[in-house]
Every structure is written in C-alpha cells, then in structure tokens.
Amino acid sequence: MNNIDEKIKIGVSACLTGDEVRYNGQAAEDKFLNRDMCHLFDFVKVCPEVGIGLGIPRETIRLVIKPDTGIRLVNHGGTEDFTEKMMHFSMSSADRLEKEKISGFVFKKSSPSCGAFRVKVYNEKGVTQAQSSMGMYAAHIQQRFPWLPIEEDGRLNDPGLRHNFLSRVFAIKYWQDHVETKPSVHALVEFHKVHKYMLMSHSQEGLRKLGQLVANEVKKPIDVLLHEYLVLFTELTSKPAPRSKHVNVLFHLMGYFSDMLDDYDRQETVNIIDKYRRGIIPLILPITRISHYVKKFKIEYLQIQSYLKHPEELGVLNKL
Ligand code: SF4
Image (cartoon, rainbow, N blue to C red):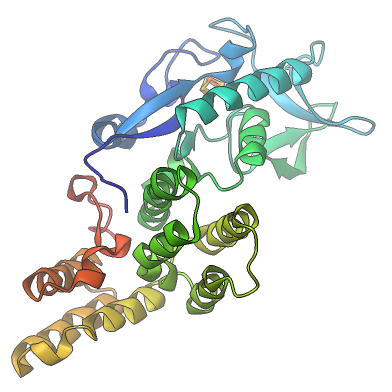
C-alpha cells in the first residue's frame, strides 16, 4: 500500500467539485468528494464540454446512434456534431492525465461526455434506445488507461463500490510508485505480497493465477510480465469482494496469531467474524480487532497488507 499521508491524484469531472460548468451554468457538487475525499486526494479537474469550446450555459448535447457512422455526440437539434472535437480533446487530455499520474477517475453520471456507465443513447428521431453507452470522453479515458479505477458520483454512495474503488486507487498508486518507476520481478513480487489479502478477498483462484505469473517460470520479458499481471489484477478487482470472501480472508488472517490467544480472546475473535458474516456488524470491527493483534504480536507479513490499511477518516469500512 502507498503512503496514505501523501495526497493521491485522481481525475474528476469538474462539475462534481463545485465548478459551475454544467450546461445550465450550475455545478453538481458531490459531498463525499468535496467534504471527505479532498483531504486525501488532489483533484485533477476536467470539463470536456468546456474543453471543446462549448459555452456556459449551453445547449444540451447527447449521444445519437446513426446507422452508417455509429454513436455520435451531437447537439439537441442534431445540427451540430462534436464527435471529432471530443476525440481530439480526449487525446490531449489523456496526455495530460498521464503526465499528472492520476490513480483513478470519478466521472459525473449520465453525462454524454463524462458518464462511465449506462449513458442514454438516442436514435436520430430522439427516441431513447435500449442500448446504453459510456460518455464519449469517459470511454476514451478508459480505452487509454484500461487499468485505471473509475467510478461515478452516485455509485460512490454504495459502500461496497466505494470501498472497492478506493482499494483499487491505493493499489494503483502503489504500482505507479513502486513497480512502474523501477520495473523488476522483485518489485512485482513485493506488490503481490502487499496485496495478497486484498486479492484473496476477490478470488482465491485469481490470487493463485497471479502468483503463478509472479513466479515467472517461463521467464517472460519484464514488460510482458507486468502488462499481463496488471490486466489480470484489474479484471479480478473490478467488482467489489463479496462478504463470504471477506470472511474467508478474516479467518486466514486470524490463523497467523490464533495460537497466541487465550481461549476467551480466540472465541471472541471468532464471534466477531461470525457477527460480520451474519451482517450484524460492519467490516471495520473484525478488521480493527485483527489489526490490534497484528500490532501486538508484531506480525510483519500482515503489517504490510493493504487489506488492513484504510484511511479511517473516510469511514469506508464502517458501512461495509
Ligand atoms: S458532466 Fe462533464 S462535461 Fe458535463 S459539466 Fe460536468 S465535467 Fe463538464
């Protein structure tokens, strides 16, 4: 896990930070971003529609599917097509984001430019289609940085999605700082070690496959090895870990110090994990108890685990 005292850069749709850049001249400020996340993250703000030269306020634009040219970004009346401009802007914006080394992106939901999930698509007569899409800018950013954790403002209110997004952002920051800067098998081994229990909470089988990659028995070139690892890591962690897999991880962690506990403390720890399993208490309680023993018994292998490290002020584990 990265040093969480250091601010991490993430891309953000500018209107979510309170900038009045929307089509109606207003902002769409997101409280979680601006009240909680801003203490730990530096926001790299982008408003793609302002970026392509549209004014504030402005006519709304939307995604329209055309039989011959596919999905286009056009004005409401269908008389102006902004697709090419948006493609150019997206390319130069992605170059900037690469230099800035962002570790995640929070997009504004439903926007034909910024929406990351299920953005409405219309036909030329203005009828909503069954098919949905990503906003045109968001789609370009995802294509350019397929490993980048992305989320939308509304979805971040879901505790599981919020926890998963932040865990992935911290992991990518660690990757950028420790693997990307000095690519080596040793750096990859360290990354894998630090994220072992995060990965186990997603898939034990996936953890095994990544472990095989890290072992690199067929001696792949380092760039191929890192690329394959990051693709699989992204795939495995793209969805929140289920409760049952967290429970599995908690018992694994407990296995490191179970013999050092007296009967009462051992049973109490099992009870706490079981209460979490039944949905009676949140994940923060078993994690806090386990972290206490990890410190008390100085279990170095667990002290480095990203799974046990989350900035308390964000309260991500309190509702999970
Ligand atoms: S959703 Fe994106 S394009 Fe629309 S105002 Fe916000 S930042 Fe600008």
